[in-house]
Length: 216
Ligand SMILES: C[S@@+](CC[C@H](N)C(=O)[O-])C[C@H]1O[C@@H](n2cnc3c(N)ncnc32)[C@H](O)[C@@H]1O
Image (cartoon, rainbow, N blue to C red; front, side):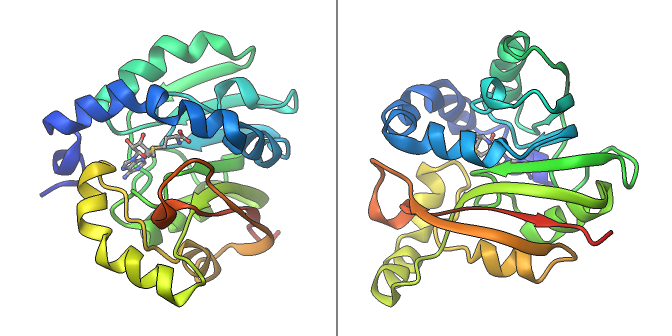
């Protein structure tokens, strides 16, 4: 099945987009919004937010961002996103596209952003190759992602519950070692802060925020 056909046309895809902001409200207020803000503070220049969802990052971009592109493949999320686009004081364009195939020229962005997206994209390796392709040399990837636990016991539970969670989380894999995938890409990991996704089940609590760059 194609990427677009996999989940976005499913009934739950529509429901997930509808409840997303409400479902995350307590988590945002308990700290996620500040973690997002800290990650996005380093965004500058032409910036692409990939898998933008309902636009939770929109009001958090700093002044140094001169142009913002929001890429989102899910039509239900896209609708919500389009309703929020006016919230930024930044020139913003919305495109329907998956991370694995971004319709942009190489070296055309200063900053790329993933927040809670590499857990869900069908092919994170290809998504990171796309980011490396569209970033200019010296450009940066900023990310906030929930990841596989370093605790072997919790990681085992993440493996056991991966399948039911994937259904509940509309395609989210709770057991991905996303930092290893970033390290295996063309990007160089520059910083990494370990924290937790507050007010969530333990299997999705281990969180990382950080940045990686494309060698100049
Ligand atoms: C958990 S939501 C995160 C949304 C938003 N980035 C945030 O921080 O709230 C995961 C998002 O990834 C999107 N997504 C799923 N598959 C994708 C893909 N192949 N490429 C880009 N985004 C994808 C989903 O549609 C959804 O909007």
